[in-house]
Image 1 (spheres, rainbow, N blue to C red):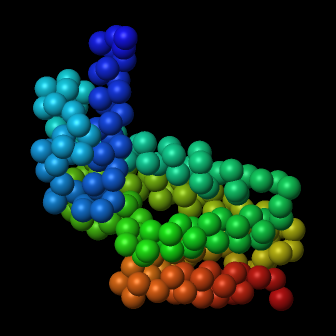
Image 2: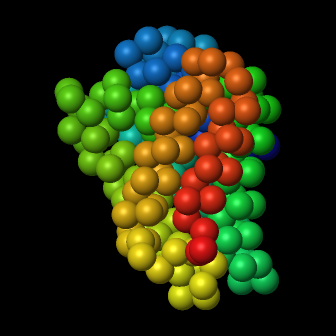
Amino acid sequence: MPTTTDTTSGSRQKLIEATIELMSSRGFEAMGINSILEAAGVSKSNFYYHFKSKEDLCLAALDTMSDHFFAQMLDPVLNNKSLSPRKRLEKYLKGMSEMIESECCNKGCPFVNLGAETSDFLPAFRERISQYFETYQQRLAECIQEGIQQGEFRSDVSAKLAAQVLLASMNGTMVLTKVHKRPQVMKENIKSFLALLSAP
């Protein structure tokens, strides 16, 4: 039989998982506490046992999404030294393209969506999302810099700025892919970016 601690811990995780799903599909404003409770199957008393407010819960959900993204999606690919930097970058970008296509171009990046929606009136959200993108850019820049050193990528570009352009391009591409409902947009832009970055 689960203990009280086990039960409350499980409730916290259910709330976070439900919030991630709802934030990704509906956004912050359209997601009420009651809809979170219904999706999580958790009582209001359990909600307030773990979190002070919807904002507090959403920050925890952002942290969970960020940790999962780096630990499960980005770092395992970009840190795979058995592949060249270019192959690592290609593999990662292909994986992102396949994920967007598997979601039928419906969701996009929750960090981009939330940043656009909340950054002007929720400073804590803006800071957390900014930190996520800074770490993301740094990881990409490290891979690109390694590719420059090995002669795979152009030596006349800044790895940091190339990573910034890639990050902005990817997120803009996700918006276009979502609006046009055409996964080929992502594939075309990935191919174009890699061609521009490649050494002559």
